[in-house]
View 1 (cartoon, rainbow, N blue to C red):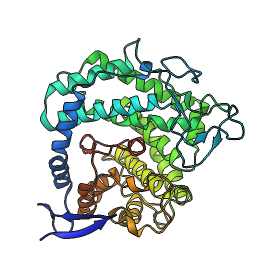
View 2: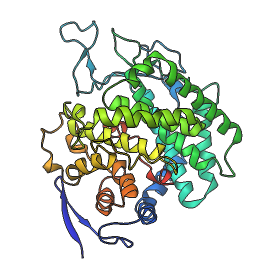
View 3: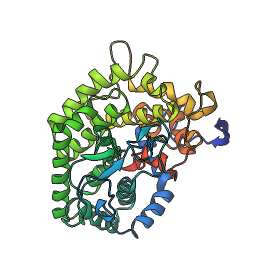
View 4: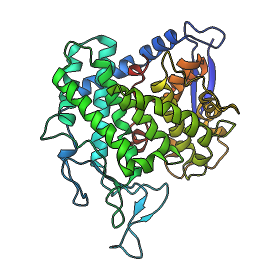
Amino acid sequence: MTKKITSGCLLILLIPLAGWVNGRTDRAAVRKAVSQTLRPLVLKQAAWAMTQTPITVTAQTSPRSAGSRHDFFSEGDYWWPDSLNPQGPYVQRDGMTNPDNFVAHRQAMIRFSRVVGALASAYKLTGNETYVRQAFRHLDAWFVDSTTRMSPSLQYAQAIKGRATGRGIGIIDTIHFMEVAQGIRAMEQAKSADKRVLAGAKIWFGQYLNWLLTHPYSQDEKEAKNNHGTCWVMQVAAFARLTGNEKVLEACRERYKTVLLPNQMATDGSFPLELRRTKPYGYSIFNLDAMVMICQILSDKDHDLWTYQTPDGRSIEKGISYLYPYVADKRKWPLKPDVMYWNDWPVAQPFLVLGAAAFDKSDWLATWKTLDHDPKVEEVLRNLPIRNPLIWLE
């Protein structure tokens, strides 16, 4: 028997999956359902990725960048020319993206992440080594080849004309390297994995991790109270796992337990600092995705952040449970619509599928199946670093 639900204005049919019992399912069933759901899309995206040549930060430059052609550069999204002083420093308009800012490097990084994520996912599905060889071409260009590689630092990200050549807040741009790092992990044992490029990529991530742990910009980002602080931990954890830095992994676990969870989440599971923004719905989803990824990356047989809760009951399960009804049916959202991109959220959020695997929640997985797995809106892609759950469901 089918069941009808409403998500936004879309009427969706949810069909119970084999293996589900009394509204619950086991992790093996989740992995099987995810593979069946994504297989056509993954193979389509991998076919696209097989035709792509590497494009790194050296392909385009901006005269406003204070760095070299190898340095990543981006500009603050919500900063605009001052109408009263057009040649002066930019002014802020929170939540309103300036379409004239330089975003080519971010777009190249997102493209790189899509290429590696698609190829790694297709390799996991099929075992076809040609996907691995193509992925390592891109890894070589970004991390090893001296003519095209990116510098392992982020000193010139989220610059503001007339105000800053770079800011710590820009470190959030490299969340799109997370699926690159995970893609490497998914393919590193393949016969076609290029050992030279593999070693070089791990050296690059080790150098970037060291920069993240030592540069003042990064320390500022680490201390951010909202999603920026969450994303600092998320990507540091991802890069530390790739490079085998157990000391940093343990420090990230401790920060999640003692700083992020108790200071960002309210006792009802919401994120008050995100709810105060001009795009509270999108930012709440984004921050929850990031916290879920922290639990996914940092949990193992000896550490379980999925079940961890503070003395007053704050936990990642409570966070998902709070937001889930508004993702299943956005019309229930109690606040005003976001000032931009309200109609573009939600998509197939990673907190739904990874949360379903962690807590055996068939309704979360069913909702994930009905949402968009291949979004095209640039703002959505920018705030959706995890688009390939197959490489994360280990």
